[in-house]
Structures are given as C-alpha cells and as structure tokens.
Image: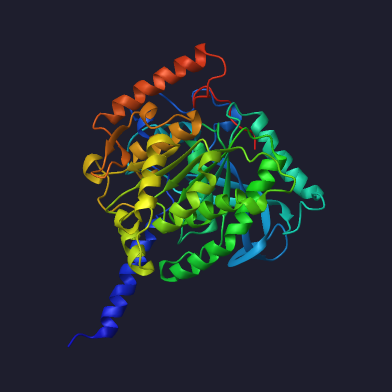
Length: 442
C-alpha cells in the first residue's frame, strides 16, 4: 500500500517546481533574435548617461509596507493604496563596465548572462484609495510629472506597464521590467505594477486571492496614468497570473457602469498576455468589453506549458495560455474566431518543436527565448501586426486563425528591422525604432 504522506510531499514538491516557472533566477534574458546577428544594436544612439549597467524604471505597488518612507519593507498583504516611485536595477556586478555589458547584451550566449540586482526603491508618493475625486496630492503630481519628463526625452512616447506573474518578488518584478527597458536601448518608459505575490509556489492560491484583490487597484492606477500623463498610448505586458489582474482590470474600465462620470481618454495601446494563467472562459467573457479600445490584444501560448497544465488541474478548467477549445460554447467559439479573423485579437502558438532551443514545457518563453522576446519588442515599439513582424498564419480544423514562428524567423526579423529603420529615416510620423529612439531620463 503506498505511503500517501510521501505521495503528498512529492506532489507538493512537483507543484512548487512547476509553478516556479514564474520565478527563474534573475539573470539578463538572452539577446533577442533581432540583435543576435550583430548587424543591429539596441544601443546605437544611447546617450552617454544611459551607457551604464544601472537601469531605472517606475514602479507602483499595492503591497502593504512596514516601516517609514525610505526604509520600506513591502509585505505580501494587499492594500488599496499605491506606493509609487523609481526602482533602480543593476545588471551584473558593481564594477561591470559598459563595454562588458554591451558585449553580453549583443552576444547570443546563455552561459554568461549577468544577474540583475534591485539596488533601491525610491518612493515618490502614496496614492490613497480616494485620491483623484478631490484632486491630487503634491507628491502624486510630482510622480506623474516624473513620468512626463521621461516621456518628453524619449522618442517613444508610450508608457508600458509590466505586470508580473505568480511566485514573484519585488526584486524579480523590477528586474523583469528593467531588462525589457534595457533591450529597447533605454527608449521605452516602463512602469512595473508589483502586486503582492507570496513568492512561493506552495502559496499559489494566496497569489490568486491577492491578484483578485489587486484588480481595482490596477484599474485605478491605469485611470490615473491615462488622466494625468502625456503618454500617447499606455501599453500593458502581463505575464502568467498577471493576466488575472490585467484582463478584469481593463474590462472594469470599459463597463457601462463607468460611463456617465467625467473621464479622460484611456489611450489603451498594445496588450500582450504572455503564457496567461487566467481561465479561458473568464477571458472570453471579459475580452469583448475592452478589445475595441485597444490597438491589438495578443496572447502567446505554449500548448505544452507545464505550469499551466498544473494550473488547469488546480482550477478544474483550462487556462488561456494552454486552452481547451472544447470548453467554449458554439456562440463563444464563433465570436472568438471572428475576433481573431476580423478584429484586433491575435493568438500566437509558440510551438517548442518549431523553435530551436525552446524547452518543450516552457512557461517563461516571452523573455527566455530570443525569438519570442524579439516579437514582443517589435509589437510594442512599432505597433505592427503579426504578419508585419514576420509571423505565419495558420488555421485550426474549426477555422480559428493563429500565428506561428517560421523556421527562417531570425533572417526575417533582421530584414524587417532594416526596412523599419529605412521608413523611420525617410517617412515622417513613423513609429520609432530602437536605434533611433532617444533614451529616457527617468
């Protein structure tokens, strides 16, 4: 007779290891494929002050803190106030030179990736739950002015919000946001929304509860940024369980109950849900509420995703990043096919068998594989659809359109980038390139 205590322990260890897909060691991600040939550099026009191994991003967190400003310890308890400011992340050791960091940032090697270390959080303001109804506090205005100052010195006038996954920490969330900004050559203005994940795979359902509690806080943050910054668009990149915050948060901002009170244009830009850990049917119910307000909504999915396979078992239903279409009604299926065929919704099937070097059960592919990270960068910096980014379209037997990476993707993406650079150089009003963007000064 089996020892069920041993089986339970083994199940818990397996759960922790699989859900840890959201919390890899904080090392700089591999060089995106668009830069791996050495022909193109993300840092070609970086200013002298940007040539450093320290990257600054904005942050906003609803983790309840302990201690005074300047010495905060952010707990895993969710609150309704937002603590906002700058996060400073160092890439590599303190003595790392720019020349060394440059080489590792344009060399496709997985063996020498430097660690990312959160050096400091500089809190600029505490945004209370009721703030905005009676005006903004001076500290909040200074924080928003700092974002506008960063946008003013950037060729890319969008603000990108990064929302991390489960089993995360303040340090990891800041590092992931910082490495995204690093590989835009410093041209992207990035804000990390750091919700209270417990930072442990064994506390997954604590994360689920805290994600749910963070939805109205995220929606309020988005509304604040839309109303009081000069961002042309506000993009959202959500990883894994971050989709449990972003999708319902965006839906809440576009519900009829919100109408009828003074509003500012939400200017919703690109939305990218990477390996989203949200129920498929929940997403299908929420997407119609905000799809028309976005430039494009993109979902990237690995149908062999181990973490989402386990999440399906835990929740009793498939996840968006590992979907089971048989769960949908005929009406839901028809609507989704129509959204993918005619509207601004894209599903990318990230097939491990078609992407060299990608682990079959990968959950972290958006930043851990050079092809996928390249596609993410092109989407956010250029606002172009999948075909213009070099992807191929296919259809399921039921007629659902989806996108895949072709075998010659590395060659395609370099040719696409060359063309985009020419368009930026010769055509006024084009979207900014990585090389031609002026770095931010946040």
